[in-house]
Amino acid sequence: MSEVRLIDSKNLEFSVRGHSPGMAYVARALTPDVSPNMGIGFARWEGAEVAWQVLYDEVVFVIEGCFELTANGQKYEVRPGQMLWIPEGTELIYGGHALFGYVVHPGNWKEIHGLT
Image (cartoon, one colour):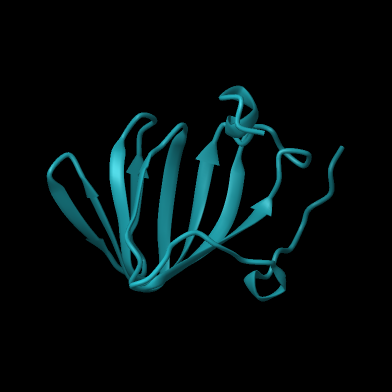
């Protein structure tokens, strides 16, 4: 049985996901070896726009700033205290200036889709 874990975003190693103009950084806080059922992490968007088709169900919850997501011709502006649920298969563009958390299911989506 696993133990309860306290995870502080300040102690995580963020990797670059976006590029100029703007930057995007993502840190996985809960890896598949801890739980294959869900992946959890933090991200900081600094004006980057990243296009992606999600290969999992995702929840994004904003901690500070304004996270922007464009999907199906609609732009969402998500602020602190708000969250988005994004179903698997959604084609989107992540953007904005925000610190946010995310949860994905399944957590081992890279393995399932042969991306490891």
